[in-house]
Image (cartoon, rainbow, N blue to C red; front, side, top):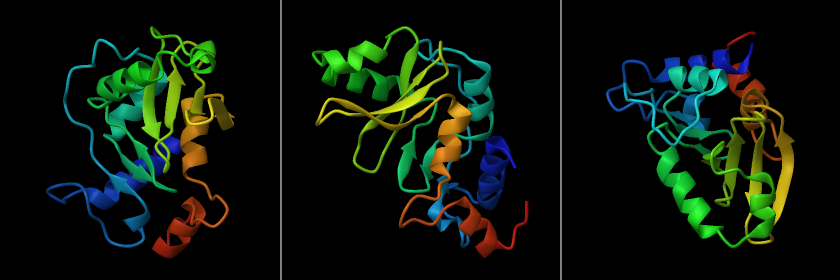
Length: 167
């Protein structure tokens, strides 16, 4: 099952719920919002991968509490981080304002930056001015990473098992 199918399965837990924010177990590990019919923000680069992602996912919290921003939130989050890190030379070594956007934050608040030109999605730990591992080579690889499992966390396979879903 690929990353888009996983997102669709999680989103299916939320179908029929007015606010799209609660679901029966085991989806408690994942909080999903459906995409909204909204124009594509001018400051967010268009790629096929981002288009597919936002076609099925409108933001939420997945796996180890990684907050994935909605298409509408990305310009604000990107601007906030770019302003905050404007003097940080290490950050700007890998970030190009025209092609990069902040698509998520990890549990400690570190931004995950997606580069539309290279497809890479990487996390920056601003407190130590370092790029963190994993450095994902695509948005798909990043979403698969989010589904885990990671040490001490329930991952996608656990969720499927609890839900009685086979894939």
